[in-house]
Image (cartoon, rainbow, N blue to C red):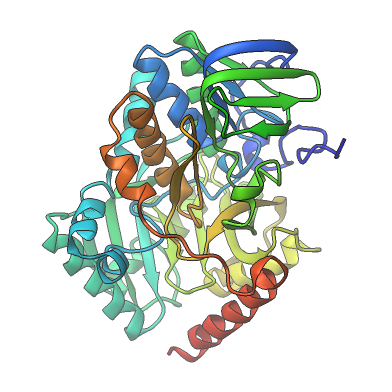
Length: 433
């Protein structure tokens, strides 16, 4: 028996875990069961799928290897960024105008789903509106203007360009030449969102098992089966939402994506006055470089600052040292501030940066590969998965039909290849190319 990917199964020592809303510890899976729908993974993809299905009247069981929101869904930057990692222009170039129009019609849907969930179920997760894309060069600004115009051509009017002075209304820093505000974006406490969605599933009659890592999956059977150390579930329909933490239990999915870690730290509380001086509009920010910085203020007035990538999913030796240098470039006045928390988590990177939906056999579905845009994307894809299981395959088939590409170099070379690529793009960022 391989060790559990989840270790002890408790949440990472993050600011989110320290400020999480009270939640029960769910029982592990015991014995043999037959269920209607089994969802593997209690992150945003699995929770979104399960909640949509429960609302439609399905009987749903969720199996999680650790705790609800243990993976990327409970550790991420908490930024609600609309769209997919691959832009509308990329979809148009690779897959044609019809697919681009299809994607444009749903890039705001994930955020709408989140806002509906928060309002409908009274989820306390510090949801606030507005996210900003920050530009460090004139070329960055030209790219943002092109994106604004492209979205507007598809009837999307939620993006506003910001000149240098307008940018300072969001970030009191001299490093940016301007930016772009997405009024339909936002930020939130991601772990509390996940915990609230889990409670909503249970309120509708669903069942969640924690501390139950899946050790074997029979995905292509007519009635798919999952096994854990202590139990087994046979389902009419199985949904695999392990994303970067699914491991190797489904070999056909393992090499479709690559785990990539990103890091976040939380300063000591700055106080409301100092926090407002640094980020007056209380929006969240990410810059537009290949290896980017992203940050926002928490509800208790800490700066949550993230960035960096490690291909393959390992954790850096010194997260604080790595991020403090980047934070000081943006906010040099914070050199005297203590760092209370620093943590790492993995997201699943797809080579094409296009999330993958698909099916193994007739009755096993999967979704993964949000490539760093998982907060809104996972909620959207959860709805699309639920619609497919409920009989409406129209949107599922569109995504499932898109070709996916393996990482060059195969299993052995995907990490070094990606590292070389990141060095190339980082060099371009430094040169302003």
